[in-house]
Amino acid sequence: MPNTPGISDVLVIIDIQNDYFPGGTMELAGAHEAGQVAQGLLSRQRAAGLPVIHVRHENLRPGATFFLPGTSGAAIHPCVSPLPGESVVLKHFPSSFRETNLLELLRGLSAQRLTVCGMMTHMCVDTTVRAAFDLGFSVRLAADACATRDLSFAGRTVAAADVQTAYLAALGAVFAQVAPAAELALP
Figure 1: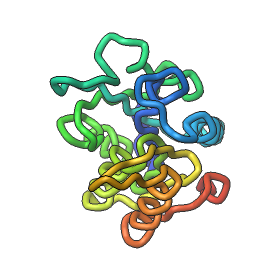
Figure 2: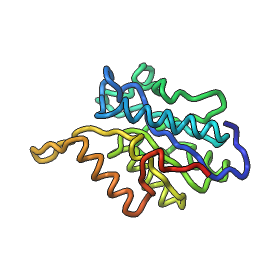
Figure 3: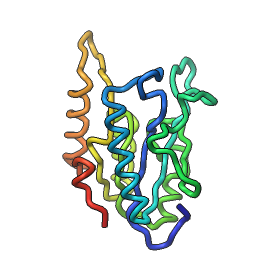
Figure 4: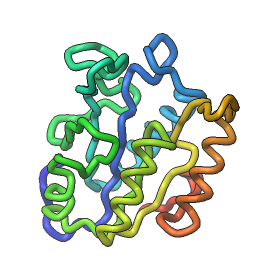
């Protein structure tokens, strides 16, 4: 969607890419379900004529195994494919703001409130939501339009559902309004 002065509500879709789905190299728990909810959010945003920004990660770290440049795994998943005119931000770090033009795009849209969804909750979603809060945006996070995976530390495995709950709870304490997508009404 072109930059439209006066628009204050923007949907930011973070890293809903093929490698996170079944058959990808970094499959997440609940990716399909989260992608379907994100698709619904995207449809509502488009129907309301409000801007959408897609964020796509390409992994340039040595030894990286997913989101490799030029691979189909790094492509945005078809459930949230950008339409002509919708901005796509390319990033190489967990934060969607680091070394990208996301902040410039948001300022060009006079964005005040961001609705965020995407993958991985514990990594790129968390980092981006916290950065957006620090930059002064009001942030809403669609809890059911995000997905993550099991994590391990000190010989213990934390189930994806517990990782998801912990990160959503932490973000909801200060950084964002966290709720199911259906409860995040458009303006």
